[in-house]
Image (cartoon, rainbow, N blue to C red; front, top):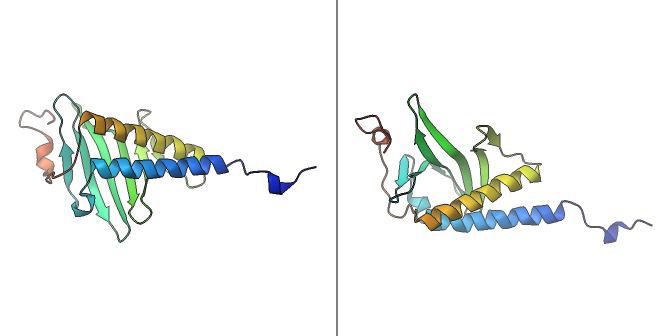
Length: 160
């Protein structure tokens, strides 16, 4: 005989795991970008010798959230490529951070699907691993200054 009181919904474990990821991503992003609330618009870069330059841009604040893009930027002859190109949103009141959209190595722009826990888990797990990796490399936006768009390329046309 089936008794619903003793059966857990199949999504309960996945949802709690996703919320754990959101909390971990919040902590990792706050370590990487400690002064996020003071940053406004523009482009900010973290440079570590021997590592790729990490770029923070399009910072927008509201009362309880901060939304921004985080990426590595690669140069190519025709255009600048960004990968992974992730839009993240921090919820300061809930102390969580989630991926809103992202361009990963598959070259497909992935938007967050509100109802799809599997996709949410996959994208947010990637962000957690990437933020942790960036921190281990020594990246930080502490005390960084806004850079002009012209500072993206040097006079020779190569990426800085």
